[in-house]
Length: 280
Figure (cartoon, rainbow, N blue to C red):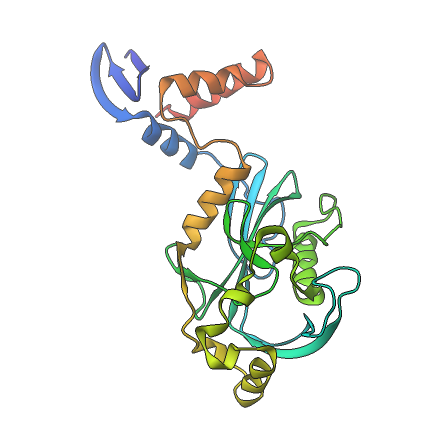
C-alpha cells in the first residue's frame, strides 16, 4: 500500500495508491497532530491557586485566582504628597475583595511585562467565563492590555525559582506591596480613579472600609462593570503578544517553520516525528 501525505496551499491531502482519500485544512491537520503529541505544560506540580495555564514554546500564561476575603493592604493616603515611590505616604486599610484574577505571561521563566488583573464575583469554571473591571490602583489600560497590572517594583529575578515560588512571589507582591498611582503616572488613570461611581460603598477608601465592617463579602454583590472579554480571550491575546506565532495554517508557513529550526538534524527529527505520528 502506497500512503502519501501532500500539502498544497492551505490543505493537506492524504492519498492511498494514488487516490485522494482525505482532504483537511492544514491548520486542522497540525492541531490534530499536536493533540496526539505528549507535552508537559509544567515540569512540576501546578502551583496552588492557578486555575488555567497555557504553554506555547518557552512562553507560559498562568491565570491565578485569589478567593474573596478581607485583606489588610497598604493604600496611598489621601494626604500623600507623592503619587508613589519616594515621598509617598500610605495607611493600612482592611478591605473586602471579590475574586481577584491575575493573568501573567512568562517567557523563559521570567516576567514579560504582560500581566493583567480582573475581578469576578464567582469562581471560574470554563474559559468562556467573563471578566470584570477592578476598582484598583496599579491597574490601568496600557501597553496593549485592557487591565495592565503594574509590577514594576517587583525587581526579583524569577527565572531560577520553581513555578510554585514564582506564583508566591507575585502573590506576595500583589498583597504585600503598596497600592498607589504608579500606573496613572505611566499609562493614565487607574481604575480606582475611574470606577469610584460604580457603588456608593466604594466612593472612597473610608466608605470601602465601613462597608467591609458591615459586610465582609459585600463586594460579591457590587455591579462591577464587564470588561467585555473572557479569560480565554485574554490568555490568547497575551500569548500572541509575548510568544511565538500560533501553529502554521498554510504550506508557506509550514516551510518557514522547517527553515527556522536550529540545524539540519533537528529538522530531520522534527519531520520524522510528524511522519511517525501519522502512522496507523
